Image (tube, rainbow, N blue to C red; front, side, top):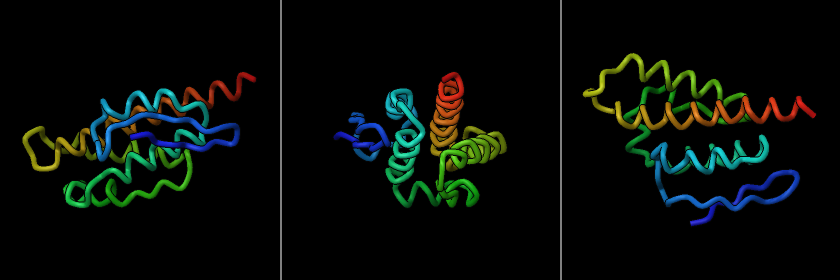
Length: 121
């Protein structure tokens, strides 16, 4: 499956497995994001890939977080990481929450990198 992400400059074609919520499947597309618009599009596609039953297993503040702009990526990463730290590895929903925290954390890291590139020019 190909994810098409439009930016103000061009369209990026990023390959990803269908309906995957695994961090390792999204790390590559996140790292390939060339600008903020692409990154937001990738994170929105990631969030849309979550099946409703998996979302229901997440804490409300994590599952219900909207992604209105690039700054919301950082807020989502913090919320997911905080929630992950409160759970133990054997508790229900921990695995899904860990995937969300890792993926949003990677997106937040890419966002910082893209901001640094923008301010360098």
